[in-house]
Length: 58
Image 1 (cartoon, rainbow, N blue to C red):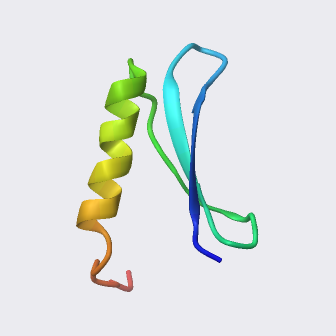
Image 2: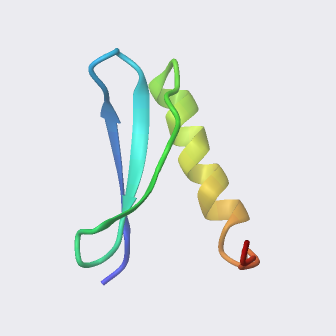
Image 3: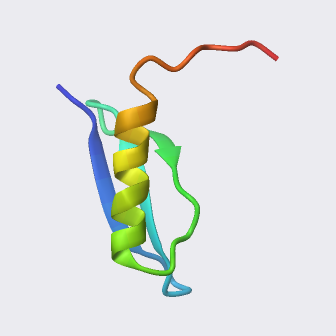
């Protein structure tokens, strides 16, 4: 099953998203955004920029 982005408003009124794996585990969380549209842009950025992201050990 594919992952899911959840878009929500936090207690401070900021818009955030989290990415959940198919098993329901949270695998990424966003910063706070001032608007829902900005958070949606953040989701699109992750979708666009991360499919082939390099893995770097530190």
